[in-house]
Image 1: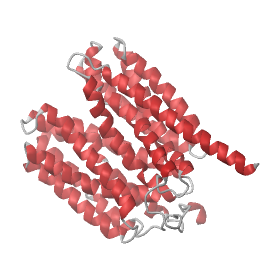
Image 2: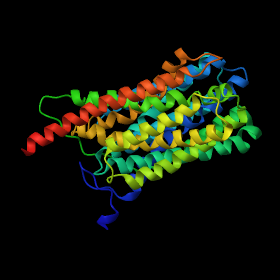
Image 3: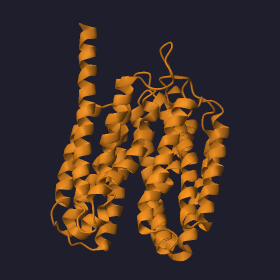
Image 4: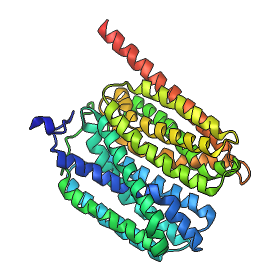
Length: 391
């Protein structure tokens, strides 16, 4: 039976049901992230949110979720987690339902409030992943889970939810899909073993851990900086909105395949090797976006970009663990990735206008190179330290 347990580097092993339920909590936390273009765009179509407000509202919710996840990892003790998860779920359901009656500034407020329970639920999932013996494998399982759920919901919203029930129906279905987290909360672990820390240190990561998170912020922000401007890039290439929509579904499909690939590769391929491969793949795909590519090439490039963007994600966790073996930085990896997804598109918006979206490619390339350079320097330093220890 021990072969079926989820072995923890810190604390007793977990039964599969508890591990799966923790993953389920994080998946529910990220459902809205995959539906923002649809649901916030619907509010704009109804005149309840401006076009500029779409990006600002998405950024606000993402920032709130990332900050709350980070603060939870630093401040909260990993005890009484079932009741924390249940309370966060009810708050999230209430926020999703409350959005049905909001317009204008109240939309910003309610989505800001929604980011709080989303951040707590994400922390509950990350707390389990960061303690496992092979965190990249469980991180890959998590990526596959939430991307697959986002893809299924995106297709359901496109096929019948939005055509039949409109904007308010969309938020009601989102609340309904969040309710299973109530069951996950009481099936997930009720506590986790505390992570080790040297005498006299706080619960925050050491300097090397913060540097790893700095590299994560840049590396994880590269793909969203470009992917957010999928439709403007398609239009600039002379392609229709239908091509853009099809490219989006193709990209989501590629992301599910990438999650499965990362699960299979976890523990077998070093994280830095994966980063170099994925960086090269992303640069090749983005090169296609820089030209007036035909529809088939644009769609193929989106498939590749979606695949490489997700493939590198799970390997960010072992990178932070190498930099900070106490795993305190690993607890903040997910929140840093969420923040990257909010901040990088915001930075790209400063170089994009209605006629030219290629500035997003510049931001993507710069953040990718900076992130890879920082992580490479940390890895070389860690390798030298291990060599000296063996000598």
